[in-house]
Length: 188
Image (cartoon, rainbow, N blue to C red; front, side, top):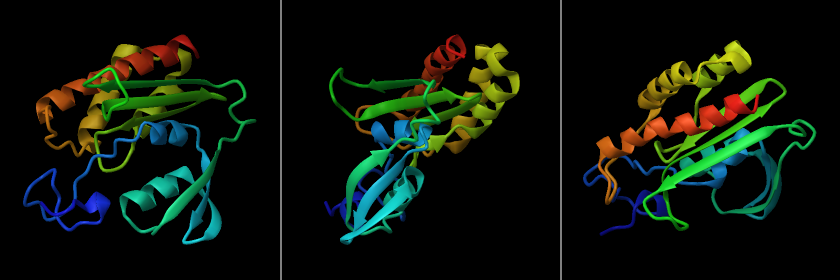
């Protein structure tokens, strides 16, 4: 089998005969760093740069950065001094493993950032869900918010069949975002 696009090949091994690469973005760290609006100090082909984690993840997903060495992550500490954050990961085994799905959320200064990983080729920002929460503030309904989040994830996902898990089972894990939503409501 030829290498997949993620490691420099020309064939997607997750969806045989696919004309485009459809890998899922499995990172545990990326959703958290995106929720904190972190920046990176990186060396791209030997040149030091500071870029946003969003730009780094986008460039990585689109394979347009070349060789990158990540030197450090920078989280704007003052902005998140009294923040509440929560990360939840579900995987097939209780070890360090690729997630079936993961969620990261940060609440700071009346703003919410919510990200979900392992359902698309990029980490997905739940912008509509964020807006719903910010609009209602601490009085938001977890049940109603869950409907917004589920709908948003279903529209933005690019779920593919993975080894050991069907697409239907993968999509059934979307409801686990309720854990994150309940934690945010309890800590607003």
